[in-house]
Image 1 (spheres, helix red, strand yellow):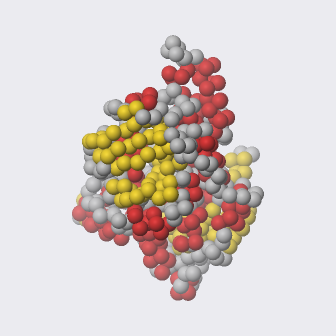
Image 2 (cartoon, helix red, strand yellow):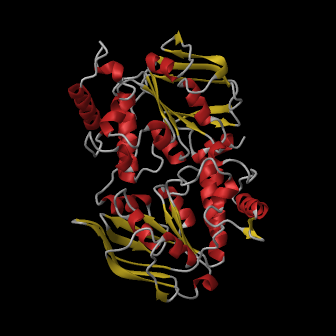
Length: 499
């Protein structure tokens, strides 16, 4: 619980807040208090109203009804800048950095520091690096953001908010792109801020994080506040049932038994960029192999190389006993290897295109062997894919307007249509709510049951342990061991991941 000194004085009070767009009500009758020096977790499926509520508090969206008070005074921000001046900052789920600018320029964009009428770049770099070091990111603030990995970019977003000296920070899925070490550093930072009386609203789909960082929990479902818990020590099963409104028997389905046939044989793989060295492993038909390890262990680079996206310096990749020559993703695709990338928005989808266009891209060879692509054929192909994965959307709907879970289903549906031999998924449920997560788990298991070999890379240890028949642990680019299902637990994995 937050210290009593931090709890003195008023925080944010929300009374009767509602938001409607025409006849569609997004949230209604929300009454909630956020106390100084506490971390309040806000949970709910995609579409439950979490982002709308946080956007109202941060001045991004104006409510249709209701009132708010902040630090004992009436609070109705007219814009995000207005909210910031009052001490309330929002760290968005989707990163809004400018890739061509430096870290320091991104941290202080729109509010550059000046000295003598000129921009004080040296001071901006100094302050940005101070925040980065507090978060455990040891890189020069002069580094161009576009050169950073996803996890590092997320830390820049967090550092940007921390320089505002805000009294209330809203974290919208802050750890979606972070590994275990980066998450630990973020939690340590939130704890320090709590001791200084800074309040936090923490929105996350990673339920295992909540007990670690939150003091209280608020649960939204279908735009309404359905539960407020005065402690974060609430069983995960109970939270899931409150979020989805029904009993959840189990999150991870029965994965079945792998077949003896070896589908993928990776021998002594070494990255041309030095990301991994001498990695060997096999994946059998009907098997789900999990790959675990902290950020920087070489997980993503390894599966990208197997999918032909990154070059190998040495080693061999065999599929069903046939050695492959991988000069690019097209070679892997033709052989029967598909990859669902870790960043679906930039690598897996065309957000400005329709679901139909996204599904057929990369599958034109399946439309018509003669090379003719007929609209009726593409529409039918897309409808079949949507139906197979349970995508909530119409073929003509823009992919960018779908929830995270449905976007991920579209990417999976696109490659599922090819009936591949090896299906690789990198962070398959990042930024996905618990309801859609369960559906994606079902889809992964069904792939294995159909006889495909499946590789799942994930920073979520519960996910890796719950889905996998075996778990390979990478550390510093090397295979530190492959654990059988009955051996794979958090301790065994972390012992090897920190080797």
